[in-house]
Image (cartoon, rainbow, N blue to C red; front, top):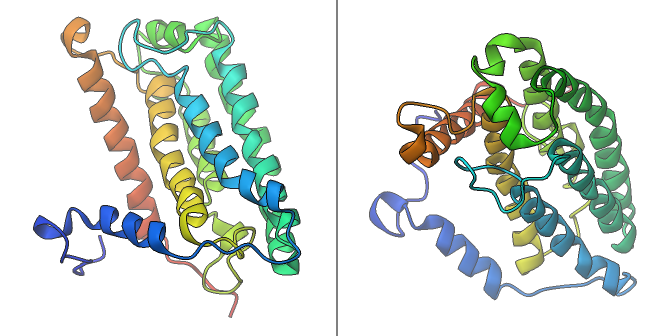
Length: 254
């Protein structure tokens, strides 16, 4: 996308670069501001990652292959994903830093405002499928719901881009004109976990889009290769997110 060579020293063609980055962050000093609420400050990265892990519990990766097939799966998704807003505000408040507090307020405002269209976009999917269980939603897709509900798909994609702080909705953390925001005071492994939650969120959302709109594990020989179809569709959606990010430059106010 960028027509440039990235970091390419670690591993063949730089494929092991993420491991090098992780090792660097693990060995960096972990600082906590003197006036910070230490418990709340430390809980933030844990809360952000754990909410992400909890979301994967209801995603069916193939037929009858989910940690929990809840009959209220969609409701569970919305409830658990809203934990991120609590973590964001905790980060800003516990940091004892005005920049972080303003950044957190800005981030929470974005999350709450975009949750409304996301919920409404899922309403159509639930009504057509006649169930909130993700497994049942996949089985109801004789025709992928992206063709039945294209507007709902677009709303979900746009809303989730905003919730994940992706371009062009990265108002909460516009790198070119404002300070980092809620994680200004985080360093070392805490910072690494916050970034892991942000980029891991893209994978989880891609898996959700695959489940809700692209027929999940459905495909030829789905009984045996369902997991492969699911993986391929998820990678395709992740590529779409990257494509959008590479296409829209960050437009500055000046």
